[in-house]
Image (spheres, rainbow, N blue to C red):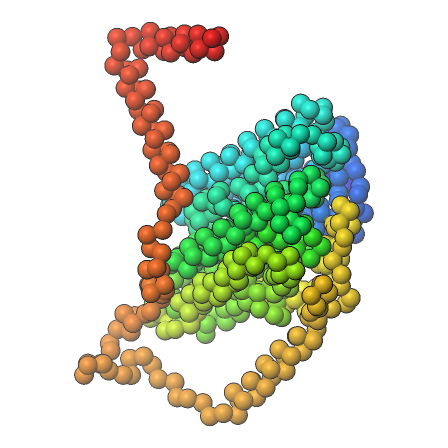
Amino acid sequence: MMQNLIIYLAVGSLVGYLLSKLNKHIGPIVLFALSIYSMFVLWNFPTDTMEGLFGFEDVLRFSAMSKYFSILSLIVFASFAFFNISWISKAKNPHAFNALSIITLLGTLGVFFSSNLIALYIFWEIAVLGSLFIVPMGKEESKKATIWYIVISSIGTYMFLYGVFMLYSRYGTFDIFEIAQNLPNESIGFKWAVLVLLLGAGIAKSGVFPLHTWLRNVHGNAPDTFSAVLSGQLVKMGSYILALVLTVFPVSVMFSEFYNGVNILSYVLIWLGNISILIGTLMAIKQNDMKMLIAYSTVANGGYILIGLATLDKVGYAGGLFHIINHALAATMIFLSFAAVVYRTGTTKIDELGGLIHRMPITFVTYLVGIISLAGIPPTSGFISKWMVFQSLVSRGMFVTEMFVFVGSIGSFLYVFRPLAGVFLGQLKSKHKDVKEAPIFMTIPMIILVGLTVLWGIFPQQVLIWITDIQKEFGMEPFEFEGTKLMTSMGYWDTWTVFVMFAVGFIIAAIIYILMPKGKKIPLEDQYTSGEFLHNYDLYHYASKFYAFFEREYEGHPSFEELYLSFVNVLKAIGKGIDYLARRTASAYLFWAAIVLALILWVRW
């Protein structure tokens, strides 16, 4: 069945392309139908099922982890596709956009199905190439963003491929589960080299420090709806590699303990997560472009995921997996709400917007629930995963990491409030007075995602069943829960009780609001300052320099983008020097012959 799904998606990309030539709105319908059908097939498909692929035996394996990530990806793609039924009229080259979107889904599902590392690499490249050709269809700056995407993706890809060939040269197989049985017996140097290379691919794709620099440019400049796929799904392909490598290989016993039961490799990964949280949070606070703001938020949340997974205990690891699905839902909701705003207003700049809460109430609610989940506030599902990671860190006495996680959570309140205040609250711009809510095909998937976020925040059992199945499959102690009661060594959390408390508080607040006298609504022009009446209220917008008082504290910060660009400039200078020498010598042929001869003599020596 896995091979059949891959074939259906391959054929579907061609069908979607041809039908989009007739009517561009049909392409998203094809993607939506394929996503729903795939979800229907995989929902009850038995795990630990092996299949061949195009004549190669046992290349595909449907594990509990495959199921978890596949269902998540299909939810994101189905929402993206349904939203695009209306939005596709804004797309450049809609027929190519539709076909490439299906190809991207094909590649990502292939990654989750593959137990053979070469097959995984091939599907990885299919997903990357599909998305790579979509990114330039966005803003004018998207072509430059594509270069960042190519370079960082290539770094991760070559690290992964080199690690795979090191393993094949030693064991003569590409099957990751066979390799995992032998790797613990290798020398410590070989284990470090292989795992760093494989994990490097996951770090690059998930946008974790120090390979995070592509996220801001790519997410910010890609087509508006595709940013939801980049953040909500494609980044999670990197999280899958991290989770897979850390669990298939017995990392906890392969490396010596370093701190309170945490091995040295995991401790290094946890610190990369710490730095990612700090960088993502501080840089998100500074952004005036709402898409770039959430792109940096993805860097921070990638840090949370990495910290949870790297703890490798039943609470922290489960929290990391839970945060993968929570962030995917929240990021998809937020980017789709932004796409709806851009669809109606034509801008992503926060200081060019304001007051849309009354014009686009469903879009506002979608964004509001999304940021509540990102900030980790009950009763959304985002609280549960952060609570689990907190519990794991405190139980291990990792208070420095706990501080980073806490600062990141507080910082998330700051950066998510900026679009809230600048886009939806405040004064409506005069040019947007006739703006309407997004079309119904856009609002339906947003409402469904809101429902899932709240549902899994109150009744998280389904997600926890998937997670504990993964833990059992890899021989880990499963996370403990009974109904809505989540249990750790430090206590428990009852999601239903908390929801009831929030509901009662909300009802009381609503009653007070209804009974209390209302203030009189006065237009902004109906006032004066310094003896002069205000005639242009668009000048009085406070979204620009929103956190200037705080940003000044780190405005001279070092930039990894600038560091990488300096390397590029050095390489350019070397290239220009070689070009100059080659062109100015009496014979370019003699010059290069001398260079080649020198290299040959050096190698032989």
